[in-house]
Image (cartoon, rainbow, N blue to C red; front, side):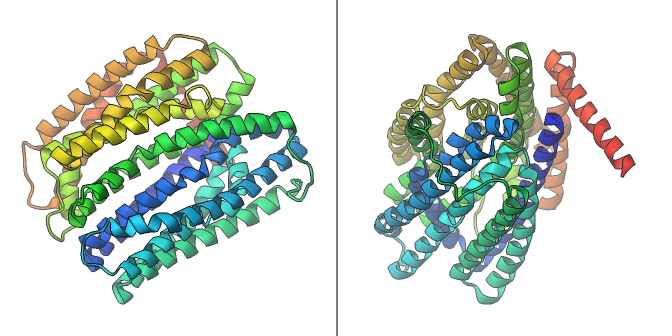
Length: 514
């Protein structure tokens, strides 16, 4: 059952994100053509500013979701009700805090744009971004319950439906009315529709959960939760250094909105790739958390190694593809003006994609085990290093400097602490095996990316679309072919292959019986 749920969740989450990605690319192309690269820059900058403000959210949902695994297994509905009620009340307070602080922050956000654009209009746009980011918080406790119960695929189906409808309305709204405000209002309406559907599913499936219960968390539980929340505040601050600090620095050094817009278009691709893999790991997180509550030792380590190998397979392919496909894709996707970065920036972005993507298997394990307190100060150090180094380099190297600063801050902090904590706390082992594998995976990824780049640059097709297809197919064959040859006899690969074979046979039986 655990394997089946993981597979269903992974498929649903990935399909959902692919639909989101494809619809996002179509809408982004329309957005850039209708409103221009300056509005793309405004969208990217305001989006990152608002995500910076969501530090106040503390990742409370993720810090509490692992608390639901045990009562779900035991069907302790009273304890589940208490946790969800606490989560709901907390998010009401958080949403009000974010809107209040966001209105104060809007002065900096609006004034960071030096182009001749109406400040009043910019303030309205920024306020709509605040409403969009907080519109799901009241229903977040219901979403977390469905995810913890290994039914995230239900949320995925709802998201796909709402996203398709949203994309259609946004496309025609941009074409007919050419309105930035309408574009954002449609997005908010779509998110609210998704929330209402999720709430209906929750009320129907979990009618035994009493959210009006007067039971409260006991003092010991509150103490532990507050301890985790304080730790998650630091992790949330560190998490903003991933992308939002770069945008903050672009505002401080007055980077032109057009260049910011090109950067945002590249980051859409990177965030989409991160998102696809994150949906995969989110799909298996609840099952891995359940495994930690029922198994110990060798079985947990075996599963973690398999997940790390899958992480490598995903990102070796993603990196080689991004390195070889991004340029022709940008020329095909954004046809207005110069929309392509040079080779040096593409290399920096590819490394950025890799180093942050390869830590997702460890992030999944940390979240499943509820490891937040032990390294609570590390994200603050990462954030400080990121800001100082990125600002110093960005003033001299522009966008490249900010990207390199992100990479340096990661290598100096979480690259060291994540493996140590996961292996020490979950497995009781030294992480030296992890670092050996990481070095091997990195060398292979570099070799595959170079070979793919050499092959794809040996010919030029007249059509950007055909060039995209040809480059993608070559990367698919070269990257995965080398990986299969290199790992086909390892225990992790054999276990991974047998796992997917069992899932395939199981679903084949289900389909034949239906």
